[in-house]
Amino acid sequence: ARLAILLSGRGSNMVALVTAVQQGVLQELAEVAVVFSNKPDAPGLETAAALGCPTANLSSQGRKRAEFDADVVEALQQYQPDYVVLAGYMRILSPTFIRAFAGRILNIHPADTHQHQGLHAYEWAFENHLHETKITVHLVDEGLDTGPILAQHAVDLRGADTLAEVERRGLAVEHRVYAETLAELIKKERHAELAEASRVASSE
Ligand code: GRF
Image (cartoon, rainbow, N blue to C red; front, side, top):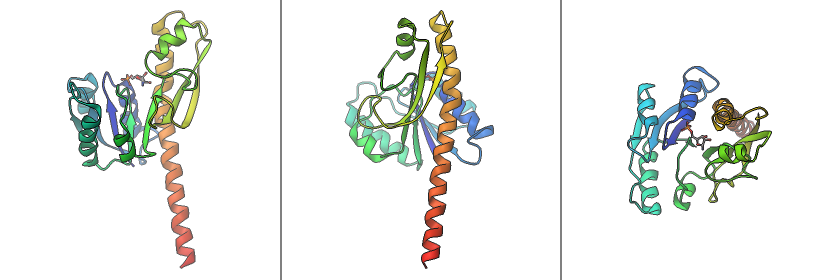
């Protein structure tokens, strides 16, 4: 499967995904078609290039959402992605974008999306002294962090007495589960394709 990975910042989840493609659970399942950013100076873009990934960017600064997203869709389509994988992409996607890749856009949210949506999820967990938070991988729909959940993994926060420690523990889980969830999804899809092909073959 071809992945378009979208980021706006440092890109630690992108690194985890690329590493999984190159030498981990996504090996022989996925390839990185492009790493794209809406911020031309995002540190993650340089990191992606250093890892050998094709990169692209379009600045969203001062652009209207719908028009910008139409340009992004066109740019991404050139890479023919099977999945659009949001990895710290700090934009709400317009309906046009979501429809262009319907059911094929994934996001990772560092909290239980039933309990917390939007920014600052680790601050929220820290300030509320949660003993546990849940990393959520979900499909993206037109709401903010509302799409169908693909996987959730608990992070034990007991004894995490700084925000930095909360983030360190959470990110370690993020980096593992994003690639694993994607691998499961791709395997399921392959299996469904094979089942369909044998169904067609046996009815001929
Ligand atoms: C991660 O915490 C991710 O869950 C959230 O944004 C952050 C991006 O971090 N959506 P990075 O750029 O992947 O390091």
